[in-house]
Length: 419
Image (tube, rainbow, N blue to C red; front, side, top):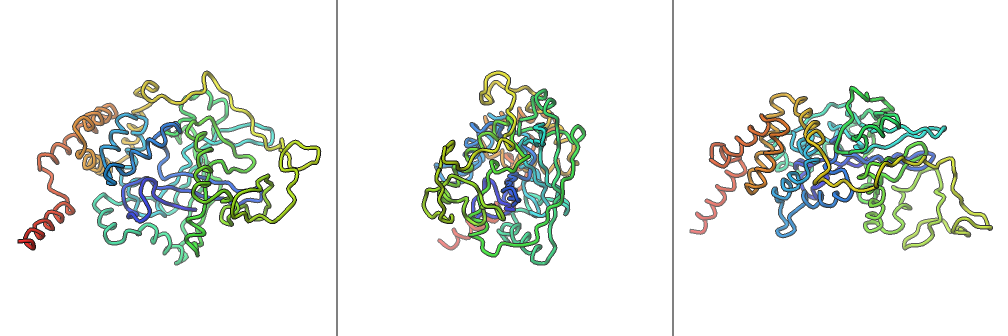
């Protein structure tokens, strides 16, 4: 299992506001299964075409190299499907988790189970922390970042070293194939399946009981891809997933080289992969006669096994991408964010309003107004409270943060030293 920031970079503090990656590689007798997820049950885009744009918006401004809140909120305002995850990221629980051990994990995408009779069922995967969940307030997260920027990683490492092994329940939600084709949200990764309609079914328990002994070999060189599945687990028409099935291996070829799947951390354990691959630098395969290295052939060789062929998907209408500008209703964009607010207690909502306002107030007025309009459609109180905090901040009613006061004092000291 590897946990990491999504939009943060190596060397940045663990407690910066950010969704967290939650990737697991299962080594089985039939090959490797990679379960890639995050600590929110939804993504901020629903089509691979929009994926790079989301990454660009949440990363650094290419003009300055600095973080730029205007990029984030401009993207959110123009991609209302992203509001659902954005609210989660700006909550204390999901945006600034108190521990990697105290996070739930979610596969987010719709995958499938296929049985021996070629019957398909749609499925979503969940990892439920057995340590509970919790998060830092924004102020606490900043203080911890200054004290120990590797806090979350060290907390996980030290717990395992102390044999306080963290555990998660691996669960799934299951939907029949026909239900999935009827529900327009089945394959939309910006939406959840309600637990009341599709309750969690426990599969087993995951325990982390061993730390890496070589960080580069076991962490930096591990390569995950949602395309790595085993017989019985398949995919879905989820448009973001369909793109991710292609781009992850492409990234690893660039990052680790053409034979990255031969690295010990990535290769199946206890099974010899049957593959036609025979080129590329730094090959670690045993020298074998692979002729014929194509199929079909009168000389024999590897051949597909129809037992593992996944049933075809049903499609309706043109196979196209989501056009966010004209595809979606108020229910699509605002219903589930409204329900998310309703399950939070009063203090959690207050912290959420402040976290959003303290980021949004730095943006141009047109960006502020566009997002407030979305918030108002979710819940009028939500929009009005965020607007009030922004107004108070601009008018100086809300005092400067401790960090802002400190910077001010440093500037005064510099002037004194200079004079």
